[in-house]
Length: 219
Image (cartoon, rainbow, N blue to C red; front, side):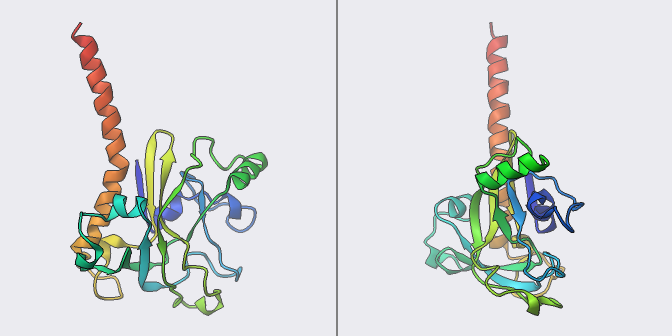
């Protein structure tokens, strides 16, 4: 499995939809059928947006169940500012755009950059609920690009699970800037759940193979 946070999410994206121009040589693992959203201003890099705390909305039922739910009502969750909404540290992570089936087909026809074993079923687990635009030159970025775009997605690559997280759940705390201290424990558990999400299926598969082998050895 693969869990990518911020630049790790950029790396796992498929850059083919933007690669006809300046990002043709962008390093990419192309694990999922999704790509970073580019800005309207062509001279601004997609990772030059800004940093600070932003609101992220967990999607029901999949996103909340996979990353957050611990059996409590949202009003009992101290870090949940509204139902399904948490405040998380953001630092120039990707705004994730999903490929459509038509886009995938056209890309394969052009240069095959979308791998055949990248499953089409990419699921959005969370979306951005507010904007961040405070980087140098970010005034040229059109407002409204960030809110509603995917912040956390999951999918399959071959037999492995992939989870990409644009914001930093692992280092979110009361302050705006990056600190040396770990983030809030409740938000750090989101990253822990993401790791569990990509490993659970693998363990199930390995256990199944082991049990099958053991059964054969009994005879």
